[in-house]
Length: 144
Image (cartoon, rainbow, N blue to C red; front, side, top):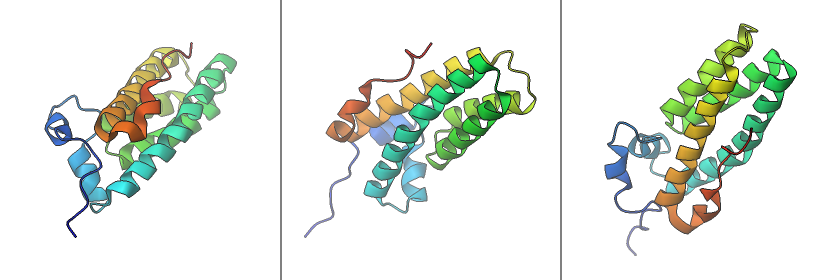
């Protein structure tokens, strides 16, 4: 029996070489010791949790709850870093820092950037992992 084919579509590693790729798939595969199914499982869990965390951040900004903003952003930051989604992780760090400083000015703009990066990662996963992620085409940018 031969090796299982990669779960990601051909060309993803090439796309990954672009500076603006939402994650470093090659590095993620190394971090997950080549276990692509585990990577897919972690991505799935991340999307399940992070979507509701983004909604919670939105509500927390509206309610002036700086502590909840930084805690939710901190969690997203760590999950994104584990997935080598550096731009998403850095954007979450921006929100975390704002929350910790209890200065929520600029949080709406940072949250908008976070939503964009989250949606980019979902689209990248949908493109790269095919039908496994066909349901991921809907993002969170519609959250006001």
